[in-house]
Length: 139
Image (tube, rainbow, N blue to C red; front, side, top):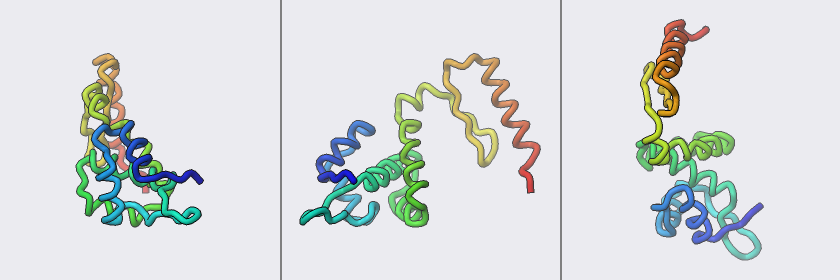
């Protein structure tokens, strides 16, 4: 198990989000968005689990969720789901958002397509997804 100081966590997360800083790490810890720190030896430390929580929080906040809603959702999720959320963070980076067109196909389906995909292929993709959604869900 890796152990990190708050500053190390902030530095690691800054690679994902330049606005992440030590103050934010401490604030999220103070309000209970991440689990309590681990005691390693005679000091309290962040672990890889905490990094997964921070990345999930960053992903969810970029998608527009409020911190109070994020806190509620994270309490209900197993660590595997939290890690999965954190791995989606690159999809919410500003540069990527500008590279992709986002299409709402259905209430529960959003498709993002790179601008490198030809207009004909985009149309076929969206038509195919739309057709699948019209079939309905199996019961």
